[in-house]
Image (cartoon, rainbow, N blue to C red; front, side, top):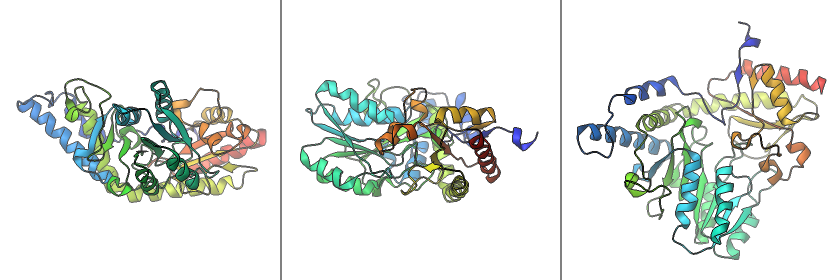
Length: 379
């Protein structure tokens, strides 16, 4: 089969392929140690041992204590648990969240208005980085219970200075949630040093299985459960644990820890190659170009193309990209991230996101650039 006919996948921020080594680690747990992890007999203890080993693996990847790792079904549940769990049992106050946050933060925060809570968005500069003077003033104006800022944006890849945010938030007597779903596996993370009180993770963004994630909860932070039941996860999340998926998350985390430096260098080289090629295309705009970003993410627009139309044109040529967050696709609206950064709607409508994975190649980048050049001449 000619190289031009082989499908190319450039949507790794939406989800990554399951690493064969992770699948191998999971395989015995579909039918092997099948005991309920809450049971005290040998079958239950075997399952519990596997869960605790995975907890230690995830904690090691992100510089946390194993006791701070709370299993969830993914990033969305982690963010819901963090926001709702922190405010439970407290009187209405203010919740602050970045204007460019993931929908699982935006929509959860907005749903709290019915309880009398005041929601305020945190402004970002045109680069996508937090407007720090405005944020400081916002925190000082009135009491705040929790603030949520992404470690890395899922569309632009823009990185936020979480230690700086934590210092400001703690000075205001509030709690900080840092969504690190996109950051984990691409840049080094250290929960202890970050200052964040809560941090969200998801396995399927780093070559693990779908349907499992984690919420890091700093020791001493009070958190009411989102799910009540049998007292699992030290009473913080009811429900029998998803043993094979948790084992897979642990295996994926261990692989990332070993390979992070090499993976990041490879991804950065691909991104630099793409951006160099985009500079030769008439009028191409790269979003967040002046900010620190993930090594694998390039979001851009080409004049004369709407993002969805360009996505479909590339898909017909066998190249899969994204027009933004997979969780907001099909909305028919321009990216809220780019609008929040101050880009006009017509340009935001044209956004395309390329997110590289560890198995992508320079030849695939060149193929994409060649296709973009061809399509631009027909726009």
